[in-house]
Length: 220
Image 1 (cartoon, helix red, strand yellow):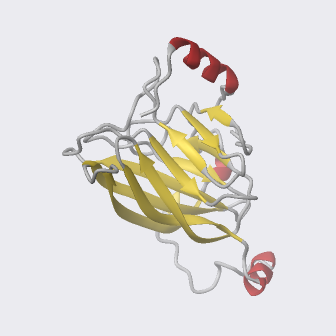
Image 2 (image 1 turned 30 degrees about the vertical axis):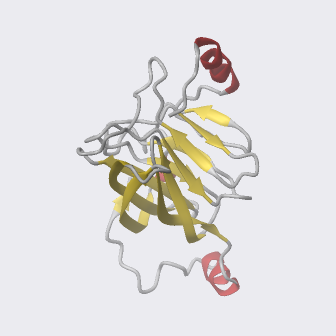
């Protein structure tokens, strides 16, 4: 668990930017405070859910001790307006866990635009306080901290809000998620990908997604 003294906390807060309900662009090597947003304030987020997986995880330390377990909901939404992909995640920490979850790190977002936040109008109760991005741009992390005035960790028996990474990608590939506190859990997830030439042509002509697909769920 990351700990800050009073001086460290002040320095940290001075290095991040407080944001409202607009875009929270996360550049490589930066960190941003997150205030949450809704589809009413950001209508471009509306789209079609094309992937919705529930993946189990177990957080184990270097001695083999189990600290937490639960499920990670991994969702990909194709935006109606732009056709680009947004990657959503929601953490459920089991009631029997011994520890809360402080951080989730997602890979691999190298070279892609990343706009991050959490959904006020979504399910769950615990929101992240800030997000940061690795200097190389590859890893984007959401942090559930114990700073004064923040919601704190995703405690045993609780669920996070839907957090998301809005990208300029139109295709996806295999990626990974890592959940961290007393233990570490790795989960198969998804990451942005360059489309194949044929798919790129179909997308450009507006044909992709129009033939042979049935919309079964909406993300407002």
